[in-house]
Image (cartoon, rainbow, N blue to C red; front, side, top):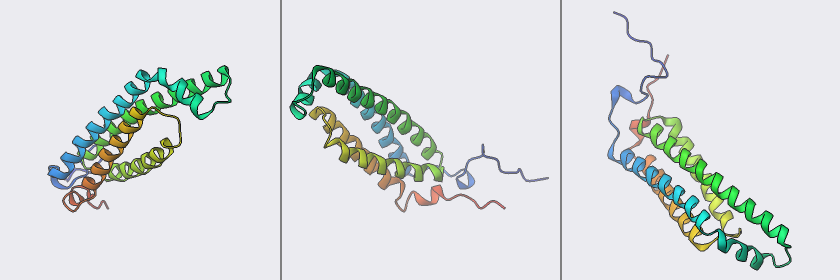
Length: 163
């Protein structure tokens, strides 16, 4: 009999290995991150009323038209990025649960981008609730990354060598 040729549809983890507890906990944190990202979208939409005052406080020389444009820009950016974040959290949870090493690396890259966005959010006009949830999202991401890259998780992500 011939041995099956490995395809991209076959699992990458060796011998159908079950994910260790650290990977399962990282995946759970990713689901929490998706939920928190959805909350960011809800908080953004719920605090639209306070946004006008925050913009005027930071930019008192803005005209009514400029304030409206800034409001629309902030809301559209936050809602769109929040929805994209929910999708990325879910995608990374799915791929990391299956032992895809590329997903562990991509998760780390996304965490780095999230870190830069968090620093940027401190200089932008935001409601305090949005910033608090953004910090919580960052902390969840930090926990997930630490779990994905610890000693217990690493063997699960090692791919068999293909000829």
